[in-house]
Structure formats: structure tokens, C-alpha cells
Length: 159
Image 1: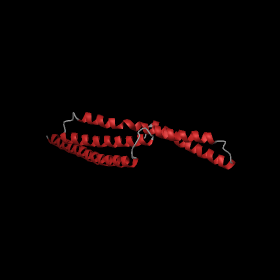
Image 2: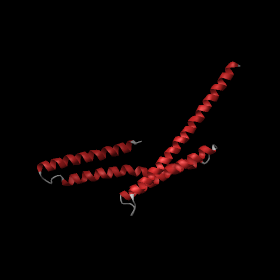
Image 3: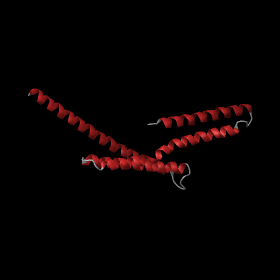
Image 4: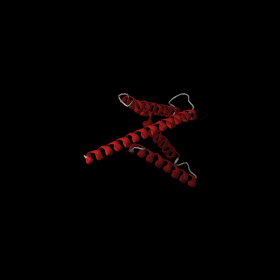
């Protein structure tokens, strides 16, 4: 889900790519280098805003770790443990995603983005499976509660 800030950054990134392309076409048609510096600046703006959008993702692992801390006080053991596993899987997903991003922009000295991406997607996949299972259990609990409430309502009406 993209936030307003992400949409704005994406808009700026795409607009700067478009303007750089249009200036490049104009430069090629006139056979001059008049727009060279503007084209370079627009390309840098596009890359910079695209990179800035990704900075928001760097602390997402902490959201998952916070979910784990909140879940520890839960009384439902099976849901607690499933939620903790799911949150750890998503935290590892964000961790590998962040490592790949930081290596890509040159903030870390070494790394293999394809290896990091493969690991992050595996964690995301398994975390998603746990999330589907957890939501299925929650839906089953709600269905059972509604059935019990309906049964109690019928008993009260008969009395």
C-alpha cells in the first residue's frame, strides 16, 4: 500500500524521467548539447526520489518486532505462537530487503542482491502462509462465536 508521500515521490520521479526524455529528444532533433546539464539533473532527481521512497521501508522490521512484543501478553497459546513465527518471518523478509537496498545504493561494501532478494521472498512467502492460516483461525473463531450467540438467542426466545 502506497502512502501519500510515496505517491508524491513516485510522481516526481516519473515526471523528471519524462522531462529528461523530452529534453533529450529535443536535443537530438536540434543536434546540440544545450540541455545536457538539465537532462543529467533530471535523471539524478528521478533516481534520488525513487531511492527516497525506499528509505521508508528501512524500519519495517521494527514494526514486526513490536508485533511480537504485543503478542507475548496474549492468552491464546496457538495464536500467540503462530503470530510470533509469522512476525519473525516478516521481520527477516524486511531485513533481507533492507540489506539488498543498502547494498544497491552503495551503503554497504559487499552483498549479492539476487541472493538477498531470493531469501527475502522466501521469508515473505512463508510469512504469508502463516498469515493466511492465522486469519483462517480468527475467522473460524468468529464463526463459532456467532453460531453460539445465535444458539443462545434462540434459547432465550423460547423461554
